[in-house]
Amino acid sequence: MDDESRRTLGPPVSAETRDASRVWPLLIFALLLALYWFMAWLIVDMRSSLSVPAFWQNITNLFPLMGGLTQPITYAASFFSPLVLRNFIPVIGGALFAYLTTTTLLKALYELTDMAEARAFLGRLQTGSGKTVTVNRETLSVKRVAEPLLRIGGPGTIRISDNEVLVTELNGRFNRVLGPGVHRLARFEYMRIALDLREQERSRDHVHLTTREGIQITTDVHVTFRLRRGNRTPTRSNPFPFDPDSVRLAAYHETVLADGTIANWEQLPLETAIRCLQDKVQQLRLDQLVDPHHRQVDPQPTIQTGMQRETRHALLALGIELIGARLGALHLPPDVNETLLAYWNTFSERPQPVEKPTQAELDARHAVARARIRERMIQSIAQGLAQVQQRSSQTALSREVVMAYRLVDTIDRLIQLPEGRDGMPRELVQILQQARNTLLEDSRVDRPHQLDSGITPDAQDQHDDMVQ
Image 1: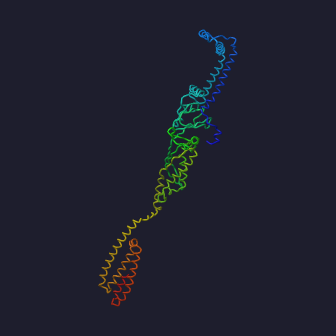
Image 2 (image 1 turned 90 degrees about the horizontal axis):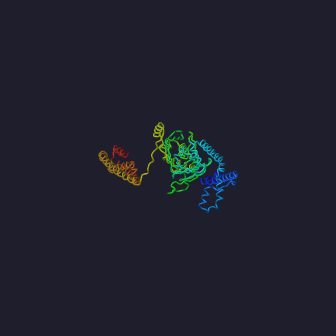
Image 3 (image 1 turned 180 degrees about the vertical axis):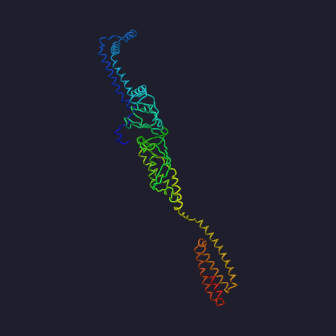
């Protein structure tokens, strides 16, 4: 409670303070009654007709030593003479009339069931006596109808369970916070509300959310909360500590909803969490929420964390501590779900990122490529030798020149193979290219010599075809 409220309301009024304040009126009333009695004694003039009471004469006969008290006893007995006591008939009648009028007024004013309940209530107002009433959060509103102490207020004795706390009012304003245990209420101290100190959980299914495009989706929201403890730790004697200022804030914070119902502190955390969630979802597109091709990470944990942070900050000012909040799965309308899934599968496909192979995978690929290169080389050489044997009988080219061209052709095939490019080291490719160029130069040098040795034009054409 702030300082201004404390100055305005003053300190809480307890039952002990109210009981002590009733002593002085009773003393004044007793003094006035004694003065009236003395005035009645004087009016009757009992001094002129004093006589020793008969009972005292019998006592003095038995105990002569008590004869010295005869005069004080005679004066005291004169105050109880019928001539004096008859003056109390108007007082007694007025008191009886006031009592009946008061009980009738209390019965009509507080809507009591009968006069017996009105007389019991008046007696409790005067003496504070009565049975101890157990206060429970769940049955407080029901018991108010049948129990005047709960409906009207003290004085009286109440008992509060270990897991609850009570907020009282005096003259329609906050008075004090009562923890677990037995307490005495001051006169007309009213019990406004009982609050549960245990952890509370609230949930709501099918909460409607709207995306930035205006599409309606639904989800489930669950929140767990409790009253703030104010850095107090639970103990064996106090298993449910609480902060009195937080209890006062939570007790007096009520919100009127659109349908006219009043949301108290127990409904407030769930309403606050739903409002924060709706604000966050309204800033996102639908594909950012549910499209697996669009989102890089799942947005639901991020939205849940943001909702928890904003809800916790809003509830701290109301004396409530948010323990946790969680969301359910996001649900789309059936028609929207089918249409968007078909669209995303058609137009939103993205290439999968290529993973970088490990060194062990690269070594395995190189070994496979080298094995394939050896296999292709053997096959090419075998095919080349078979063709040379077939053509050597028809041409006049020398065997060395034919072999040179076949080797050049084999090297070209090896360099152009995909396995060769991926599996051969760069140095090996360069060596093969140098060997190819050397063989070509040697074959060109030997070619004129072969022509002068009697190579026919047809053989020369076959030689050119082999080079191509």
